[in-house]
Image (tube, rainbow, N blue to C red; front, side):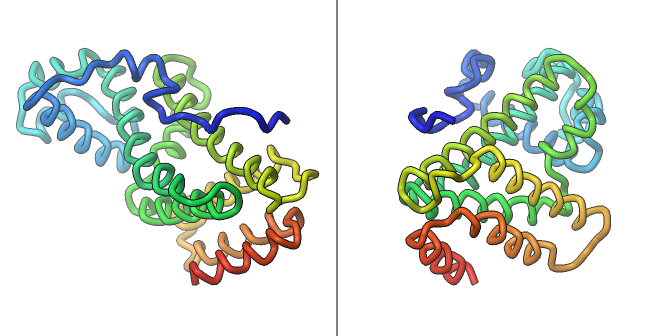
Length: 234
């Protein structure tokens, strides 16, 4: 796998659809964001498919035409909720991690911020995960938007692993795609076992598994760095 690619951009840079979506000015922007916040909260409980302009209008104490003016259709509302969630996810997980040096410090920050985010979403649900259940076999714009956002995050995670190889923290033989796959799988397991099975201390199980995923590929420098990073999280 090539390691010369630029680090993945934010969704606004990688999504032509998102770039083309003009934000309304002033009060209209604030109203739209308030609607999206409410819709995201609802989607976490009842799913994207449960969203409707009528129910959202009732919840916001607005007319249906008032909500419709911001989105135009139920499908555009669903897509906007996906983009809104990704913007919040990016602000909480991806952008703060970029403040860390390239290599294991950045990868570690990305994964542990992701872990913290999903742990917080155990009660409300993760749109990426619940949306996959709803739309994995339903082609269309909503599925396309969801796939784009997930792929954007996976590309960022893959790039962080590649940078850890370049920094000498992980071995040149590191199977980048495999490591990314396993890290993603840990988060899926966390969401499943915490929400459905209600197993306590799932986050600690994930932290231990995270070390087992990375340790076989760490260099001597990376092994010490990983121990230091893990100790700092304790």
